[in-house]
Image (tube, rainbow, N blue to C red):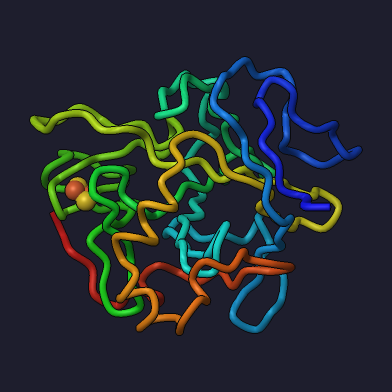
Amino acid sequence: MDRRRFIKICSATALIAGIQGNRSDLAGAADLKEFNRVKLVDGKGQPIKASQLSKEAYIFNYPYMGTPAFLINLDAKPAEGVKLTANSGEYSWEGGVGPNGTVVALTAICSHQLSYPTKDHTPISYYASEKSEIAGKSGVLVCCEHDRVYDPTQGGKMIATNKKATQPLTSIRLEYDPATDELYATGVYGTMRFDDFFKAYKRELIEEYGPGVAKQETTDSSTTVLLSEYSPQKDQC
Ligand code: FES
C-alpha cells in the first residue's frame, strides 16, 4: 500500500506519546502530504541533536532527494497557528519543535520563481544575525533573485516589500523526540510546487544528482549540513 496520502491539518495523525509535532488541533484547509519519516543526521550519519543546533541555517533534502529545505533554530519560540494562504487554501502553521520550541523547517525553494541553493551557490539564504539590506533587518529568509523576503517565525510568510506578494515557503512538518533529542521530517504542507520545480530545473537536477535521482523520495535519513558548507557562495542583498 502506498503510505503517502493527503490529509487535512485538522485531522492530523494521532500523537505518539512524548513526541512533539503532528498537532491535531490546528484549524486549516491546506492539505498535508505525508512522506517518509526521515531522521535528520549529520555528515557522519549521526543524528542531529536539536539542543546543539547553531543559529545558522542548515540544509537537508526533503521530501525528495533533490528538494532542499532549511532547518532553522530561531532565537525565540514562534507563535503557533499563524494563518497562511497557499494555492490549495488557507492553513495554520504548526510552529516550532525542539527543547525550546524554536526549531522550524521550510523548503529552500523560493515560492516566486523557484530559485534554490545548489552545491555551488545560493540566491536564497537565512540572515541569522547579519542584516539583509533589502529587508532592513536580520532573522529573515531572503531570495536575492528578485528580492523576496520571508519570515521564518511566521511559517515562511512573504513579508511585503515593494514587490508583488507571493505565497509562503512550503512548510516541512517536523517531529522532535525529547527522549533522544532527535529530529524527524514527516511531511509537507502549504504551497505544493515540487512538480513545477522538477520541470523548471530538469537539466540542472540531472547534472547535480544524476538521472532520476532528484525526484526520488528521501528515505530513512537526510544529511543535514550548514547552508554555508552546502552552498559556499551566497548572494547578499
Ligand atoms: S525566484 Fe526568488 S525572488 Fe524570484
